[in-house]
Structure formats: C-alpha cells, structure tokens
Image: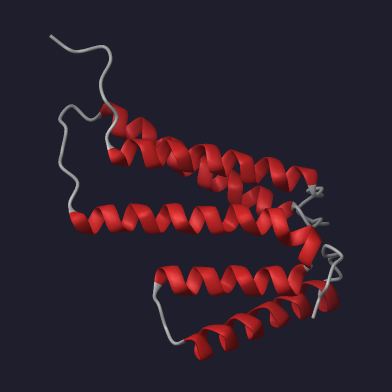
Length: 155
C-alpha cells in the first residue's frame, strides 16, 4: 500500500526551493518593470530568467513526484544540486542589488559568483573576465541598443 505522506528527499527539497526562488526572481523582475520584447526594461531579463528557472524546476519537481522508486543520490549529483542552488541564490541576490549598485558593479559581482561556483579559477582571471563581461554588456545594451539600465554606481 502506498503511503500518502512520503518524505521528501534532498533533490525534491532543493528543486522546490529553486522553484520558489525562480518565482521570487520573476516577481523582482516585474518590480523593476519588464517592458516588452521589442522595448525591454531593466526587469525584463531577471523576469525571464526567474520564469524559466521556475518553469524548469517545476517540471523537474513533477518528474520527481512521478518516479515510482526512491533512488539514492550520489555525492556527485548532490554537489551538482548544491551548485545549482548556489547559482540560483546568486541570481536572486543580483536582482536585489541591481538597483542599488547599478548594472556594471552588480553584474560584475554576479559574474564573479557564477565563475567561482561553476568552475573556480584564479581570482585575477575571474575579476578580469567579470569586469570585461559587465562593461561589454553595458556598452551593448545601454549604448548600442539604447536599453535603459538601472541607475546606480556604474564604476
């Protein structure tokens, strides 16, 4: 007989947390004003990223619920789950600090976090790549595409 109240395993708990975090990021993007595809506002990409994270993790949550047997989680997949959770948390912090710090500084910090979590490298290369990436994105979006970015300390 099936137990109607089944204990959640680590994968399900983290996936549920990421779903909630994705929804929170999407809501944060709405608060920044989303705009449209042709005229995106500062909250467009955070909203899009949060919605995608929420949708994908919700699909994963449903798939985990449909599994008939419990499987043990290996150390490698546990590490991958925690990396995914850390990356989602970094994205959530990014949406919170974007208005206060401005695009370049907040994006540089996000890029440093992502690079250190995904594949740790030397601090010098991490910072150099992060600053280059954020300044390049600022130039692309603000100067070339004329997308207004959040005000703040750009440098």
